[in-house]
Length: 454
Image (cartoon, rainbow, N blue to C red):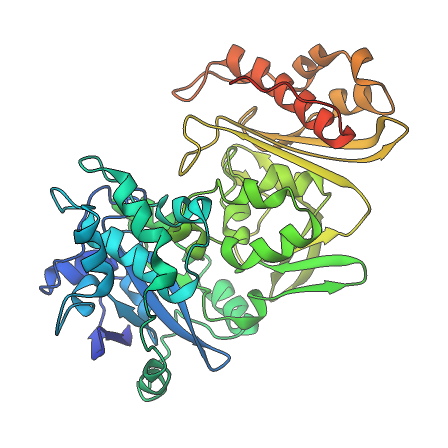
């Protein structure tokens, strides 16, 4: 595979014989050791760099966990690492970290600096909540986070870097187009039919861990990130149509516009780095029983669009998940779009995990319904973490339909699920928590007061 990219302004051309090479390993093997490996799974942020691409003639920045991002993803892009910030003199962000005593051992500092660099040049935080969100993907265990938050909140006072020259530089790069990087959906479908055993790569936030943690190896990879058809969101015949390669970051504004409660829920998924790479289609296609998006989308009665060279079929999302690790997806098919009905239904979501940020769900909930006369009509309730697949709670839906909350038998949830015990939660805890989560969500939709323990 031939690829070309810009690294801190310099052109890099590579011939890759191994599709598993991560960006971080390539950087460190080639002397760019500012980026550090802390976790090799996209959690700690010590390896953070900033990727730049030209989209509609404008530079688009993304923070990247280089430990789980394949080096081939950089083809046609620019990567800025911590070495690129201080070639002539210390960067103002680095100086601010010094001034605010934001570094002690320094191991995580390069990644923190690059996350701040992304915030500076993409969307500087306007308040403490946004500053915390910007740094949620960067762990630091040996210094005071208050200093780093002060730097983040002061970013609006620092002049942005001039990134316009990158547009011309990337245009002059003349990057090759590897066969494994299709640029149209038809090309991708033809390759999928030709290589049914190839590993499909979307945002690589899961596949990257399979490489670094499970040490899996693939004969081929099929990367979908260069297909514009899969990166679009639009309204069509009363449905919100979301391309499978739309990232959480790209989807956030549109989803929040229609369902305001989505904002808080989506910002608990991963971190800025993860949400900038992870895709909604990838989260569904991997079939995880604790994936964050299925409960919400099942509650909204979403359908998915599956395509192959043989044709197109649509499937209710809840029917896509057959059993643990098995989805209704043929070897030559790709999940290409998500169709969400724009009905007048209210939506509530909840995620239970041990941390507020960057954590996997023990239980997650999506609930939608029509609200009328103090009751919920035609509720759709979906849970993650309660079975081997994301699944609806149909007995509880029937018990809740058009029934005042004080008369609902919440115990019927046990007829829908027999959860397992694992490292995240016991079966008993999951059941009791799920009952409390759905009751709270109902109170939220009905505008009833919610008891909050402090």
